Length: 404
Image 1 (cartoon, rainbow, N blue to C red):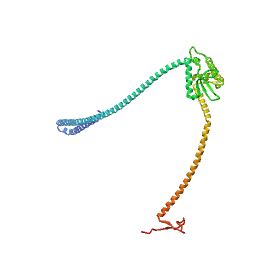
Image 2 (image 1 turned 90 degrees about the horizontal axis):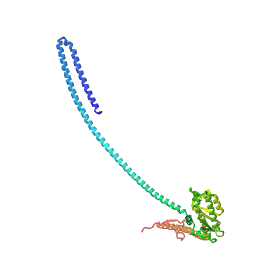
Image 3 (image 1 turned 30 degrees about the vertical axis):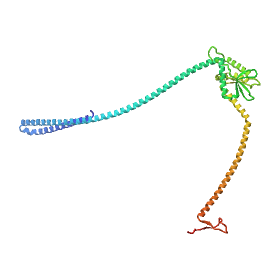
């Protein structure tokens, strides 16, 4: 409707203008007739007045007819113009609707494509996430099964360690694995029996003199340590634990330190790092007492350090045993190097002489080449005093060969 409003207003303005022109024409005619009335009044006023009214009536009727005819024509033209304008607007509206529909369809197709792409990507990511979650859940299930198996193993280990003989066997096995991984086979022996007294040690280290044999005991008492750290009714005080350790130190010192057969000391192997840390952190008097009895308290970690030190000592001793062989080989190597140096000097002298000879040969070759070139050019030196060939100051003669 907003598009049709200017045309309607223009048509209404045109009709109003035509009506105004028609009214102006009627007013002019009436004015002329009124001006002519005084003259007509002089005659037959009544007849003249009637004639004037008749003319006025006829003029008004003609004007009304013309106005009606003009209004009809203008209305028809206005209707045609409005109809044409409406038809053009309808066509433009249809074109606009088609264009808009095409653009909307295209845009919807693009949006649909992007939505499908986003949905596909989202579904893909969702599937990947789901697969990852399922994989992790499977991993968690496997870990849970392993934890349950480990829990059973820990319970079995606790049951195993509950027996004193089982703990002793475990400590001996741990000691055996550590020693075998560090020392050579000739440097240790397990279940060694001393010649004096028939006492058997879990392990002895065969170190060079003056150290000699060093016994290692792995039968450490853990019962009272477990009772000391527990919260049950069987809990004991640290004094009971210390008394057990002190007795064990005395047993090792009396059994495994044999004058004349072993070294001046023995090793007490504690198979648990926690027990070793407890002794060194809270019971320093036990460490000092063990030092006084020449008993060295070690854990699996510190035993590795002791054994590495022993291996270094063994290596040093073996190196000293082989030192004369090393000296002999070094002497032979020195003689070989002397011969090599003498031969190297002779080779250098031969190379220098060969270089000088090559220089002389090069000079002779250059002179011969120059002599051949002079002969080819027929530039022969003039003979003097019956000598063949001239010196450097001999004049050069150019001999032109005769034509055949």
